[in-house]
Amino acid sequence: MTWWSDLVAAEPEFAARVRARFAVRKHGTMATLRRDGSPRISGTEFDFGDDGQLRLGSMAGAVKALDLRRDPRVALHSPTEDAPPDDPSTWDGDAKIAGRRTRSRPPRTARTVSGSS
Image: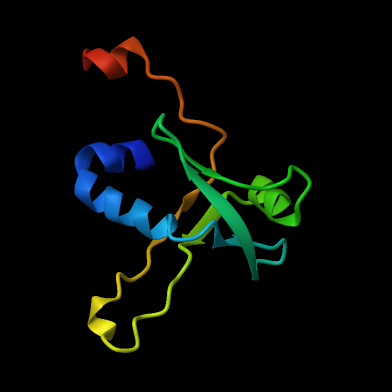
């Protein structure tokens, strides 16, 4: 699994463009899976923390949070802006991220940090 912080380290310019698309407005869209496997679309807030973690906003008892506890698969779509009508070619686009919810990044072990075996 690739973590957001790994993407930032490997492709900082691309990660900055994605982050900028998520920052155009406060609320974006999150897709989770209902118990029967059908999609649920919810508005949510995103936070790209200074610690390299991407966090999703939700109340603990919200249905979208319950979906993620049951099935960690999630897709995120940045807030969108309309293309400028006079010059649509200048539209900055949007961004999407798909992955799995985790509580936090696992701690690095001495083996991971040093690369020794």
